[in-house]
Image (cartoon, rainbow, N blue to C red):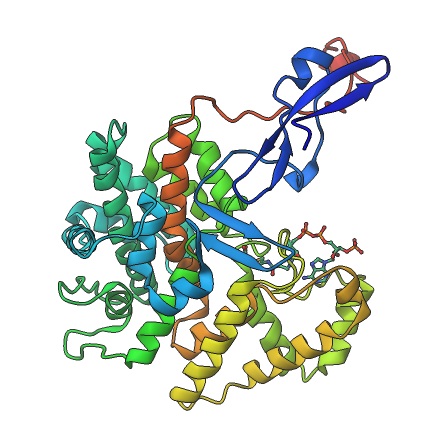
Length: 427
Ligand code: CMC
C-alpha cells in the first residue's frame, strides 16, 4: 500500500503522507500543503476533514458501527451502565471494581452545588430555555473552582471531570424546577446516577419519587447511548474551545450551546414537535412525507439522516427496542409512537430517502421514550447534554495533550482593497 499520495497542481507536484487509523481509515496529511503550494483545502461542513487523530470513539457509518474505546455500543448497552461507560470513555479502560467504587464515591461527593451558585438560577426569567441555563451555570463553575482552571496532571483532571459529571445532572434538574417555581431538591446520597436525576427532577419533600426500575434503566441507557460520538458539532466545539487552553468548565459549556440546535441535539425536541403536529393537524403520514420531499416548505423529516451513518444508526436500533419495552412495561399507549413507526416504514420504502441514504437516527425514538418517562419536552436536549458529558470531557482531555490551537483558514470572497470615503462623499 502506498504511504504517500501525489497531488499535481499545474506543474507543481506535492507528496502527501497517507495516515492510517487502527481500523484502516485513511487520510491524506495536508499539513504542509499551504506552505509548499500556497493552496488550502475547502471542505464546507468538514465532511471530508479529519480534524484530529483520536483514540476514543470509532464509527463506521456504512456498516452502522459505533464503538467506545473499542467496545461495541450493543455490548455496552447490554452489559454496562452509564457511569462505568463514562469511566471507560474518560480514562480509556473499563474500571476495576475498586476504581468504579472510587469514581462513584467521587460523583456522590461532588453532586451538591455551592449555595452561592444556586442564586444564579433565580436570576433567569421564568421559562428560560434549560439549555441556556445549563450552559451558563456550567460556565459559572469556573468561578467556583479557580484551582481547576489550569489542569496540570491526571489528578486535577479527575477532580474537574468528577465535578462536572456530578453537577451537570444537579444543574439540569434545578433548571427545570426553577422554571416551575418549585423548591430545589438536594441530591440523594444513596441513589445511583439516573435515579438520582429523576429524584432531583420530581421528588417533593412530602413525596419521594420512586420510579419503576425499568424507567431508571431506560434513562441510564439513553445517557449511555449519547455518551460520545467522535467529532460531531458539539464535540468539535469543545475541542476547538479547549485548543485555546480554555478551561474544561467553559469548554463543555460551549459544547452545550453547540448541541442546542435542531440539526444536532435539539432534534429530539423537533421530532416530538413534528409528531405532535402530524397528530394535531390530523395529517396522513404520506402527505407529511410528500411535504418533506417537495422541499418547498423547507420541512425535514426530523430524526432522519446523519452526516456519518449512511446505512443505519446503531443507537436508533437499540433505543427503538428499549422504547417499545418501556412503553409496554408502563402500559403506555402513545399515539406518537405509532405515528413514528408509520413514518419510519413509509420513509424507508421511499426513493427520496433511499437515494439519499436517510435512516432514523438516535433522536427519532429518544423523544418518544423520554415522553414515556415523564420528562418534559424542554428537557430532552438537556438529557442529551448530560449523556454527552463524559465524551466531551474525554475529548477535551485528549485534545489538551496537543499543542496547536485550532484555527481554520478560509477563501476570502469579499471586496478587494477600497479607500475610506467620508460620509458626506458617499453616494
Ligand atoms: N429530511 C429530508 N431530507 C433530508 C434530511 C431529512 N431529515 N436530511 C437530509 N436530507 C436531504 C437534504 O435535503 C439533501 O438533499 P439534496 O441532495 O436533494 O439537496 C440530502 O438529504 C443531503 O443532506 P445534507 O443536509 O447535505 O446532509 P448532512 O450530512 O449535511 O446533514 C443532518 C445531516 C443530520 C444535519 C440532516 O440529515 C438533518 O438535518 N436531519 C434532521 C435533523 C436531525 O435529525 N438531526 C439529528 C442528527 S443525530 C443526533 C446528533 O448526533 O446530533
